[in-house]
Image (cartoon, rainbow, N blue to C red; front, side):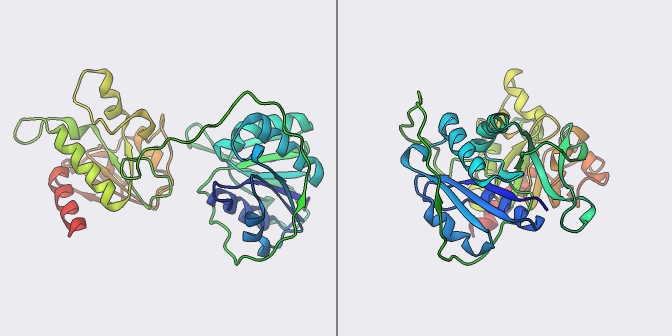
Length: 341
């Protein structure tokens, strides 16, 4: 097996995040000599965190100039680490920071890059020394491709959530510093602004995904629309269960059609063929009919349940593990009451 370089950037507290640990687990499964390259304001804590992983070398570009995500500084740091490690395979977590910088680094090195990989493994499980192959999805997760490249270095960005992260005890790591002159930048990071945790609706690491359909904003049994109550029921469940919120395309599109909408939803919440493809352990669809373009986004949700008044909806045709034929308003009122008890 060819030598591997794992590129990872530290989090705000100096540790290695979950995407980095997932990429580390993938790198270790290949069996080649592993070098870890770290970037951040301080990297010793991250190196100690994974010192017991068996990596042969730890390289680091450290300094305040490399604390914040910027293309210029990240590309300079990654290029220097790649040249110092001299590895044929470069694996990195597919975070927004690396996805922005590493394609340009691959061009500078005369190599090739593949993004949104879901795995990197040896072909057919063959012994060490065989050709590594990348698995990724195309056409909104309807087609799976397995590919390899002869160009080197080969940079691969692994999508988060595809493999179990590496776990191990911390130890003392010997880190080799790689000197990089910070390039001139025009960007100054002044701080972060983020919504309160109880206002956040998109939680990629949540165990539960709740998806709302257009039925929430339609006339109910009493002939009236209860969009305000629907929003409170949904948000109440999200807060109590710390779940993530998804939506069908038909619901998020209603804002442009002059119909009642849920103010907590945007197109960022959309799940399906033209939306996101989450990887939560459990999913609960409410007031959705289970049409194929929407259901394709649930391909990697392990356990799928749905609530719908129509016993013959798409979810009942083998697309859900369990279908509750009931009124979503009544069900969610009861669920929220149980969660609050």
